[in-house]
Amino acid sequence: MVNFKKLFQLVTHPIVTTKKYEKIILLSHMRSRSSVLSHVLGSNSEISGYYEQHQRHADPLFDIKVKANLLLDNNLSSQHRYLYDKVLHGRFDPKNLQGYKVIVLIRKPNSALKSIMSMGNLTKSLWGKDPYRAFAYYCQRLQSIIDIIEKNNIDVCFVEADDLVEKTDHVLNEISTFLELDSPLSSHYRSFDKTGEAIYGDPSDNIKSGSIVKTENNTAAVVSDELLAVAQHYYDRCQQLCIKN
Image (cartoon, rainbow, N blue to C red; front, side, top):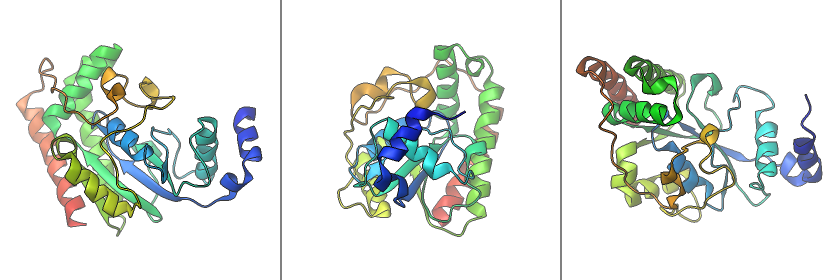
C-alpha cells in the first residue's frame, strides 16, 4: 500500500531523495543504552536519524524508505552527511557491512538481562516474567552480531554500555574520531518527535533528561548464575572479536 505522505515528501525534496548519504549502523541489543547513544548521534549536525527504523537493511529500497521516514519526521536535509539506524534484532541486519560505519554497543549480561526483565514488567509483556526468554534473546542477538562481524573484514567502534555512562567524554571522543565528525559528539542531546515512544526506543522518562546520566540497575529481577555464566561467554566473545577488529 502506497503511503502518500511519504511519497509526497520524496517528490518535494528531490535533492535529498537523490543524494547518496554515508551510513552509520549501531549493532546492539535491547536495554543496552542504545536509545541515549542514538539521541546523542542524531543531535549532531552531520547525522540524520535517532531511532530504530525497523527496516530490513538487505532491502534494495532501504535508503529510500529511511529517507521518507526521516523527511516525514522533519529530520533530514541535504546538509546531513550520514543516515543513521540502530538494529537490535537479527532480521533487520545487513547482509554485509561494506559501506557502513559500524558501532557495536553491548551491555554486560547481569545488568542487561535484569533491565530487559524490568522493562517487560513496565510494559506488561512476557519479557518481565521469564528470565530464560531474556537470556535466549540476549545470547542469540550477540551471536548474530558475532556472525556478521566475522563475515566482514572492517573496523568497528566497540562501546561497552557502562563506559558510555561512566567514561562518557572518552567514549564520545572515540566515536567522534571513528566517524570523522567535524564537530564532536556532546553528552547533551535534543528531544525529537518520537523520543520516549516504546516502538522507537526507550519509553522511560530517563531518555527525556536531555543528557547522558547513569541510572540505577534494576535489582528486583532475578537471573540464575547458570544463565549469567553462559551469557557472559557470548559477551566475552563479542567484545574480544570487536576489539580485535
